[in-house]
Amino acid sequence: MTTTAPEHLLRADGVTVRFGGLTALDDVGLQVEPGSVVGLIGPNGAGKTTLFNVLSGVLRPTKGEISWKGAPPPGKRTHHLAKAGIARTFQGLNLFPMMPVIWNVMVGADRTAKGGAFSLISGFGRHHRDEQELKERAMATLMRFGIAEYALRLPGTLPYGVQKQVALARACVSEPELLLLDEPASGLSGQQMDTLADQIRGFSQHMAVVLVEHHMDLVMKVCDHIVVLNFGKVIASGTPEEIQADPAVTQAYLGTPADEGPSDGSPAVVDPSLGNGNGNGNGALR
Ligand SMILES: Nc1ncnc2c1ncn2[C@@H]1O[C@H](COP(=O)(O)OP(=O)(O)OP(=O)(O)O)[C@@H](O)[C@H]1O
Image (cartoon, rainbow, N blue to C red; front, side):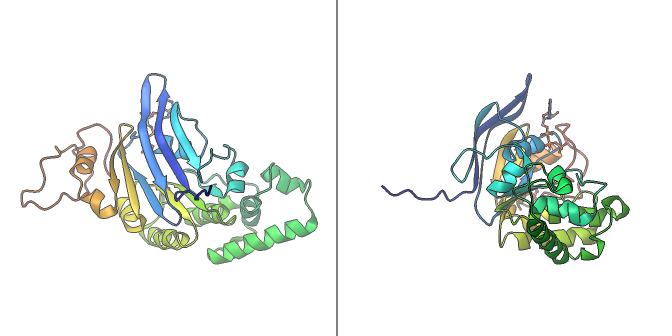
């Protein structure tokens, strides 16, 4: 009997998450193919972070299943994920403030570091040659991200945009097959966001990316596929063009009835500049 490898890297089936009486996710399905960029969007409180936490193994769903390359997920600790080829960034920077930039990136480079930062600082169980190799890989990644000059600086002494790049470098240094990005554009300038967009498209040459992001222009620019959540349910799923033309998406963000499209009959376009008039109390499209 021959078995074929699953086409998807990551798959969620019928994922439901309840917090007490509140259903944060309701029967959500999602697939991530190798080399694709998948966006998760939705108004505030839609369930994006909850789904991200389920996908990254941090949160166990009340119902439903997650599979990684057709098998159960590898575990919820960062080093479990890293070993399996999954890396993530955090909504906050989550850098170690007392460690220089290069050490922060070395932590990400070490797929075998069970103790994470502790094992790096203590050197427990590691040979000098291994540490040298980690340092070289971290340095090469810093160079690739154009931030090698900051290698010996503490993160807190650097501009926010550079710190964001350090966090991204730390996630990418292990050359993951899947990169989970949690609001990578928050706090960035327009120019920094353009750089980020180019980077994400570049990443997809080597890895799949799942992106939770409020900045619609970035999402529309970089994603191959977008999943839209509202009140914990998937209300739309498709290419950026399909999502922009979907009246249910416009309704979710702006609170306009789905059948009230533009009077000229052209498809409704989700406009990031429209911030008010949200009828569902979920906040504006940002
Ligand atoms: N730990 C928790 N306990 C109880 N309720 C929670 C918890 N985490 C999230 N929720 C609720 O679940 C729902 C979905 O929240 P979630 O943070 O996933 O939405 P989101 O789309 O990420 O929102 P935002 O864009 O504002 O970050 C919200 O109603 C939220 O209040």
